[in-house]
Amino acid sequence: MISNLRRVPLKAGKAALAVAGISLIGALPTTAMSKPVQNEDYMQAAQNNSYWVLPARTYSGNRYVKTDQIDRDNVDQLKKVWTFKIPDDDAPVESVPIVWGNTMFVTSAHDHIYALDAKTGELKWEFKDDPHVVAFARNRGVALMGRDVYIGTLDGHLIALDAETGDKVWDKQVVHDPSNSFYTMAPVPYKDMLLLGVSNGDWGGLGYITAFNPKNGDRIWEWKTVPGPGEPGHDTWTGDSWKRGGASVWSGVAIDPKTDTLYMSCGNPQPDFLGTVRKGKNLYSDSVVALDISGSKPQVKWYHQFIPHDTHDWDPAMPPVLFDGKIDGQQKPLVAVGDKGGNFWILDAKDGKLMDHTVVSYQKGHDTEPSANGNYACPNTNGGVEFNGGAYDPNTNTFFVPSSNQCGYWTAKDRAVYIAGQFYLGGAFPKLVGPNTGWFNAIDVNSGVFKWRHHFDTPANGSALVTSTGLVFTGELSGNLDAFDTRNGKLLWQYDTGSPIAAPAAAYKLGGTEYIAVASGPAGFVKSPKMSDQDAGPMISVVAAQGG
Image (cartoon, rainbow, N blue to C red; front, side, top):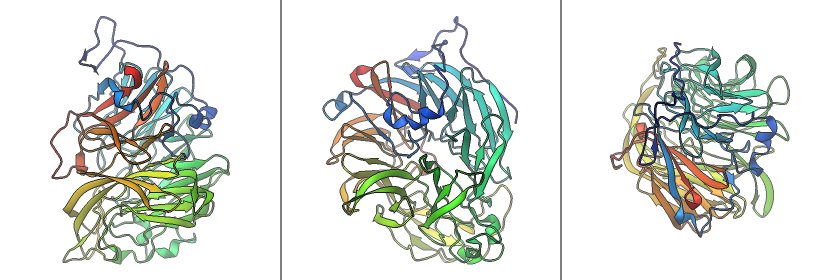
């Protein structure tokens, strides 16, 4: 990979381009790293609202933040304080900002990294490598550890940069097969390891999650999501179909540090739409797996498969969320996951027992398989609960999660042929038909029924951010960032970012002011026919209480 590193700051003679609050390139603001990030900073993230240092704020994966400024009474006074135009091409932005000290680290779809002043949006430095895109351009964020920042790339590299300057520390290609494997997930730091799952579940690869040494990129351990010969679950695949079984680790993970248990969602089996060549349950695809990572090699504690032998690409793309909630009147440690089949699941975090199941999207044809003549099934591959997932509110015992209503017309072939670098599907991607709408769902954890639902005219991909003051934020593909009353779903505030939102919001506090940040950009392949053409390009928008 040829490096094309651009480092900013610019020299003082080059003035900042800041027009109408939009920061493009600025002179050197304050230092990028106030202090190194230590293990205790990750552990204490739930008690400290000044930073956002993990992809979903805490190891639990729950985007819940304690606030003391932004509440139901004054949320309508939130104002834009700055925006940063991401100087990348017209690709979607799905990453969540990482905020530490006075610096925000954000990424573009093509693995560019921008270190910004979290108060003003001024650019401190920029890193660009322009990797080869194996499949599609997406990046869901970076990891911050010590004084370095880490990114997994679209061509299968893991790169460490000096967080102060943006200079490379090391760069390694670490996927096993770069012709069909790549990274979109944000690395997750944990106890002197970097955890990173591979993306290859539609291209004929085999899923795995790896623990890397952050000092040099060496492998510490690796766990494959499809069991090989002699391993439990191998008999759920016929013949040699397991060798290209998929089950990627597309998105984030949750961790219980008290027990060193890693919770991860495994993607769809392959070929996606042709089940006749891989008969059986196809473990561990479409499953949540709990791994004991306390030793030198991960051990499966339990697994729960949601859709055995999936033939519609309905995997649980949502990162798991750990929380202690009341269900059937009893307080329990729980883990929640949603899937693209339109299901929301709550499991016992100790043993994986199913506690509740709520259908959150329109469903049709779940008992059918794609055929040569074609048939209808809902949701489509971009429907149901997508990559950003939701969040739990301990004050109301409510889980908030967006979902999408879409349907598709599905066809399958009589065989699937693997060609390196191409889709391995066994059929065509379904033709989009029927509704293209979304829901923001508030689910009573105790009963599994809806407390309230808010309908969107577009599919819903924007996750949830819950505050202790009774607010829940989510983004729309219309470009709106919304704030709802957690009790009743009343829309209290809305801000139009100018571009579709398919990314989670983050919260942080700096200089006594509370901020909400969210990325937006082109809709990409989630664009639906009824969406407006509004698109101001990829950007980060930041709003604040009391005008910042």
